[in-house]
Image (cartoon, rainbow over all chains, first blue to last red; front, side, top):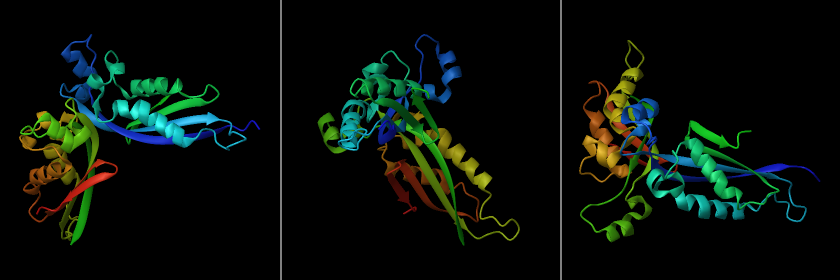
Length: 138
Length: 136
């Protein structure tokens, strides 16, 4: 058949974070990260779009069962990040700045190992309605 | 009489936590929103004013003036802040969307020009949750 189709699942979570590089002094952190460096954190409503690309199965017509994808995202990503402080509560960011870029990469790595190798995966993550990142870059 | 609305946005961390209750009671009432280490939102703020249209300008209010009032008295206080810790006008208040809307009303109400009245503060905490406050 050889016809590749992309299917998407949107989810959302909200979280607090701050952008901070512990190797830099306070002044440099403020110069680079500005308001995002606020020591008491700030927060966002994140919107996550997970894109799966592959050939529809001849038996089901599905690229992937979207209920399975939805449950997978909820169990592995949303539970970990929703209503959390990304810097303090999510171990993946104990040593990694929780920028929208890095959150997209972490989300990809979590999902990739749970999704069939035959299927391509791409993450689009909105930090605000106007700022978003995509990984892998296409 | 015409209503005019200016839409602004800010983002902030907060938690819902009543310090006079036990940790268990806070968890029972506020659930995930009581997370000790905070969580956060992109808030969207709709400020609606009302007034007669001026014959001279065709305006209810100069929207640039309205925008700078909101920036100075609301956004600079709230944007990229922790609502529980960083905001003077929210001190000792529960940081719910309801209380935030009322506090934003109080920040703006007396600062509008004489011939313009504040009509409504509509505040979205998420794209799916919002509150409205009409001053009473």
